[in-house]
Image (cartoon, rainbow, N blue to C red; front, side):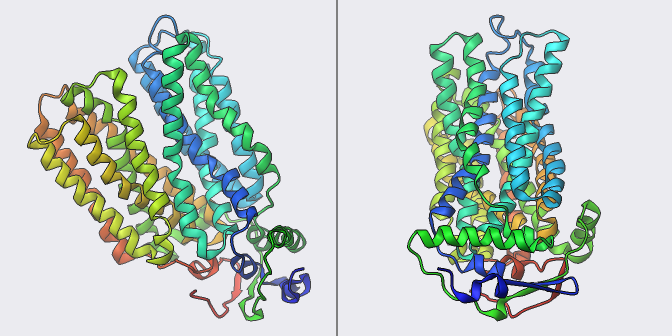
Length: 500
């Protein structure tokens, strides 16, 4: 049974339009239970799917210009990734707004459906005529929009339903699973492209994501709406039903729920929906330093990742003479290093602290990149040691990059949280798109390692800047309720805040 202090009567009440609620405190007092595991499995696949998508698109791109497939030109193949990126930006902005207005659950079901439809339809592209190309690009745009919307809705839901003491490690670990998707995509396309007819295998490659999505569809349908979102929108009865269902689930695992201090209640006065105008006011008037922090962390990590990830095969082939058929092996090693970082370091962001760990991971990855750049220019590396250097660098960089998404999703008020994630995600993608073009130019035909050496130093400097900004502007959010980290826009009074 739930303790008396978490009964509906003591959990929420309203007077003159003001709602007094213990729901945030009831969420944060929970310890890990099967419910949290199901939530992570159901929602965390967003990043797996994106990593899968990017990897598959890169892998099958080389075969789509063959006559037995679609016979596309190199420019037409390159446009597939561009259209997908534009779709992500559009989807993040559109579905981020809808997630704040209509609820997390509605959107994390819709965005998954949009992604599934877009990706499945891509596999039906029939040729390279004008009409078929329009169909191809439209389906890639739709798939990208679904994934972009996933980021805003998923990160908001996870942060709002995860107890404060676990929020950092879970969010960082989930964000890091992008590289799990990259590994699945690499292995899947490698097997398909080498053992099945090319005109069938590339289509099957684009169906790997929808198959995974369908497997977790039912899990998402049975997750509750974010109780925090419901209470902020004045839906007290639904909020109580949602938190009560979570508590019953936790109790069924054998836990006894601790009492909740009445002084931990929040008082809010729900208002009309907050759109991007409210977001702009918050970002630039009320929280300019947090906005600067978010933009810096997101832009710097996106620039570094896009610069290295989208050109790593060029470096291996142009400077180390690695055959194109062998590059997937190096990608898997690179992806393993990126996956291990968030999973092994994530808990330190909750214990050592956000500011110290973000600063440390950004600075360390920047310094290590500068050292490896010097070794590259001095001719001290080969394909194996270069990949090993990248694995070590991105072991730390991946944890830092995942923490950038965590930062954006927890340091802004709940009413505009998904929109804030969407805006900074869009900004990061736009700046990140510069990386592949710039580094592709530096690589050229591999005739001048000095140009790439300078490029690596620029990438190192970018990450070091991110680390310095994190130290001075970072928010110590570890272990704190979201309402302590960012007071809701609808808050009427403040309450004694927990720092544990």
